[in-house]
Length: 579
Image 1 (cartoon, rainbow, N blue to C red):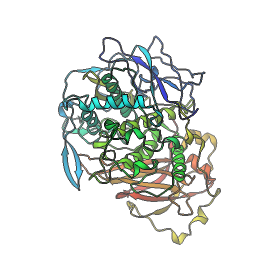
Image 2 (cartoon, helix red, strand yellow):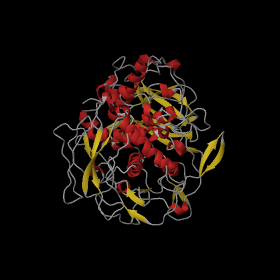
Image 3 (spheres, rainbow, N blue to C red):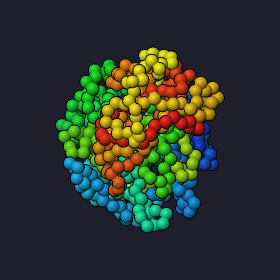
Image 4 (cartoon, one colour):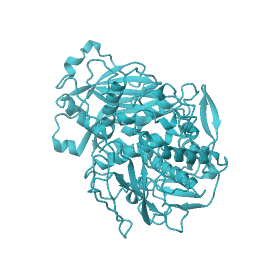
């Protein structure tokens, strides 16, 4: 199917007793059974028993996502209960924040902490999300393909949101502050003893996709209500396709569409195709080279290196856990690259798109995350019989708070069919076969001691505990490169790339099998400490097959620092159980 076709979903209408209109957003049921389509389409039908959902493939090849299914469970919402039961004492999901305890977030300006208030208006009346009863259809179009009529309506809806009073939780600044509150330390919950409050962080963990899906869901509902169109859907920025890589024109035309424009962007990058491997500086690639890199990056993030739930969606994050246990392939990769790519280098902290606290102030943020949301669906749809969502209750019962289009505070649980070019472009090795012994002469390998300050390119020989594994062994366990205790300054852009068996020292071309993946971070502020530790898990199974080095006793890993101060605690190969 051509990339010119939009993403569509069937959208439920909430019961009349609730405060919702009929517009909903893309979600998916973790317990639903679906017949996948690699290009992203599926149909779902709802049974009388709402907790038993299933869906069937749209045999007509429609490009419509049926969102009846997607609003149930944590691929979208939770499993069709009419209300949320209180968490029992033994459960450990991340709870919803107490708005009365919302604290001042902190931004950094020229190295100095600057208090920033992003707490919403307090409403002590919270309602639990109720499952919609009947569906309707709503379509999210690709932003570069919409017509002038659509753009005018979108601009009108955004302008009306901007014009709302600052005290209105539906206003654009209040909606933008939602991201700050959940990502820059304003929202907290009490520790087990109640002696302290612990920060909520929805990035770098398994909550990344569900939180942002809910966030767009309510933002989109508010837009629709402001133009009296419950079927209105936001556009998605199709940066994963060559046809959609440039910033959509509607966001650049200040005179005609002022509500979609933002001066605080990297103006040079706005004229270039989006670089999904962006590290904060331009590589001066031509559009063809950028497209080739982007294609391989997407294939790595969604296919080659994303074969388990945690490797794609992020590591487990429960109540009481330290924040930032580890991002998944897409969050750490192209998602973060676009944030940094769009941030304004003239601003002290990369505002707007380049910093968590301010990212929601740029209308382009929502188009960006609409495509991130689409990536989740595309990944799920190619899973076949493999698990598509966590079934862990601590994931399903994680809770968030959002204001809806009626100013009602709602508690939710974490419970498009277009041409996708990167499916067909797996990266190719320059040389195939056992190579590590002849790649780097021993004298050229420096002795590496950990913790390692990554201030230059480092090559490390990493032993493999197992080699020449059978298909059954690979199906049972993924071979994973674990880079542990990555210590970075969260207030700065940080990135490093990882290569395996790279022999030509070419670190610009990412469209090759030697490129493994990346670690990247959008700047944000934590209460304490400034230095946090996290880990990066990079799947190797498919890559080692591609390189033809499965018989090697060790692999050569190259770490290429791109931005920021980085210290690494250790690096080794482990074996992750498959889902």
